[in-house]
Image (cartoon, rainbow, N blue to C red; front, side, top):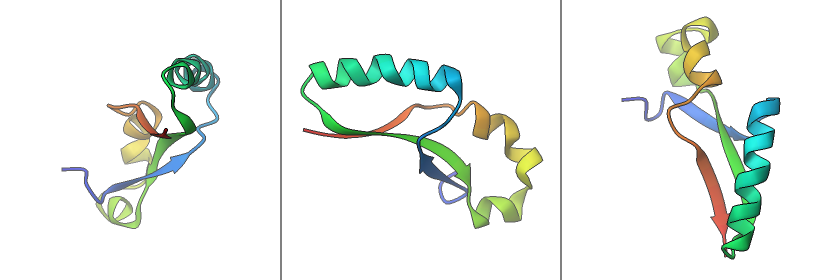
Length: 72
C-alpha cells in the first residue's frame, strides 16, 4: 500500500536510532557484512500528494520496519 508513497533516505539522525544502529552494525560486521547503510523513510512526491508531512509524521518517525543495505 505504501509502495511509491514513502521513499527512503540513509543516515537517520535520531539518537536512539544511532545507538541501535551502532549495536546492529557491530553484529552485522561480525556476521561478515560491510558497506552497511541504514535506510530511513522520507516523504516522496507521491506520498505528499496523499498527505502532508503532518499526515505522515508518525510513520516517518517510527516506521514499521528497519531497512538496511549491507554487502559482503
